[in-house]
Amino acid sequence: MKMRAQDIEFTLIRSARKTADIVIERSGEVIVRAPDGFDDEEVREAVADRALWVHRSLAEWEDLNSSRRLRPLVQGQGFAYLGRSYRLKFVADADVPLRLKNGRWELSEAFVATEGEPAARKAFRDFYIAKGFPIFTERVHNLAPLVGVEPGGIAVKELGYHWASCGEGGTLNFHWKAMMAPQTVIDYLVVHELCHLRHRDHSDAFWNEVDKVLPLYRERKEWLRVNGAALDL
Ligand SMILES: [Zn+2]
Image (cartoon, rainbow, N blue to C red; front, top):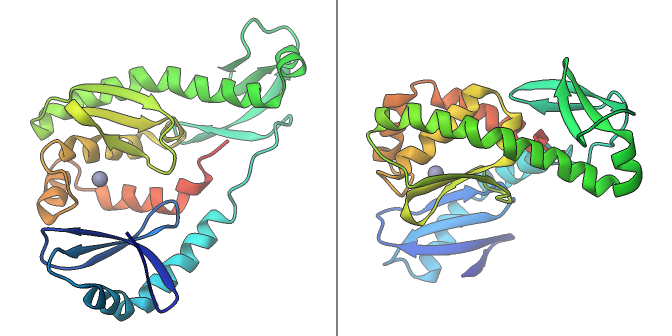
């Protein structure tokens, strides 16, 4: 349900919980989770009480996302892969649209000329998905026993503003853009989703579980918060 308190617009989700909680989603949306028993007035009060924090967080979100724009596909442009930036080089004699070779992205000149820029960007996305599947599969297999869970399946795909999600039947989905992040951050995303197989929420019990497997998770979560918006094509 969409609501408003002072000048803050938010989406309200009521559930069986004890306290109200406010988060700013990666999309910039304000989500308020409140106990079932709270009436609208109590919800608005809870938001008004934290108005300063919400405004500060939204300003920070604007800041982190203002740099978000399409990277021009020009010679020398950097595109990240597993935490490192590699420069783009146009090549004339290529048998695949895009590959990473000798520390350079090699993009086929002929492919861009005939298929256009959107197709070239899709070639990047296809590359991340193709490389991402075996990498995420390997990390999930290594880390799942530490959490003591067995995921139903793994997918690397477009997830909009979410880095990862845990679907029906325990399928773990990861955003292809996560392949631009360092391996340590990928491990954090994997552990995070694996722990959701035990706890569906972000309760203390959930974070304790994450902490047990990945004591440095706060650093990685913070890395993602600060650098996440720049992980784009
Ligand atoms: Zn989560």
